[in-house]
Length: 184
Ligand SMILES: [Zn+2]
Image (cartoon, rainbow, N blue to C red; front, side, top):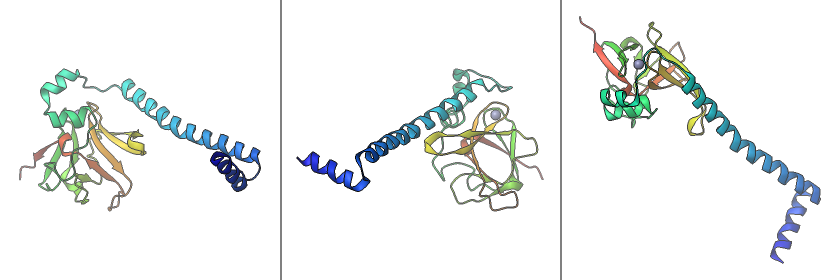
């Protein structure tokens, strides 16, 4: 009886039965699409990552033996360090930042700024162009992942909300970086 009342109230709300039926079909289709799109996106991202080749290739055990556990988690497993916890968040000495995985030059201190987000932020990569971009569909968002061109190490993400003339904010994990201070 209760079910009948519910069905009738739905029919009253949505109109004739065929309209309810079509609505339910459409709703089902939307749910199916919402479920399938992220899966398809993840699959294509994983495919891209696997097919991507980098000049520096090492096995997982080699990376583990060379990196700290935190560097391995961030660089090789696309982890993110806790905001404000990294060594270079509030670090503004003159010099340049290299990939903690392979030593490739990535950023210079002149382009570093405090984005108050808890991660080292730059408005441009270094002229060496060792930072490459991939579309990242993880965690229900569409972001642009940044990686080291030489070893494929995960660095962070780049956003279009930078405060300077470039309009870019390279948001980088400290764990992905090493720093070389300029000699005056
Ligand atoms: Zn690298």
